Length: 200
Image (cartoon, rainbow, N blue to C red):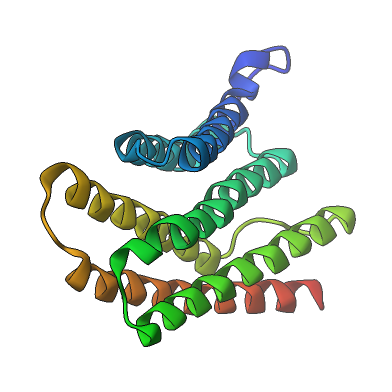
């Protein structure tokens, strides 16, 4: 156990989460203002994923888990996932020259995921207000992992296209849509889990 006056260690996990949050904002700035910097977007995505992995591990290891830390972690995830997916659809999906069917299907899946993320964030605020357990359930954790993999894979594909000049768009949409389907399913299961908890 940590001493009460050991401020640095008590807030170490939260500082890591805040670092990830700031990098998520940086990623959005780069994606909107400097879309040609795909390598930097990929690097920031990897670093954000590392902060997401290690902040929870640190909190458990140092026994410093808190409601504030959990809420901050979820906020970082939402700021990373929702705007990034919107930017990928708006700026980069048209470059893949998809058929109308694939284009519509991909946009519909991403729209569903973002809608559910907004509902989950509303559930988070409700849970905090009602002093309920706001810990991520197993579906929520799996969903976030899939969302990270989705963004990472999409950016890797874009980097391969740009820097290696290897045409992979034809195959990549199948990978992207498969991950989107799994993510959408996990998102629905996640919100079902919170609904059951909050109705007790």
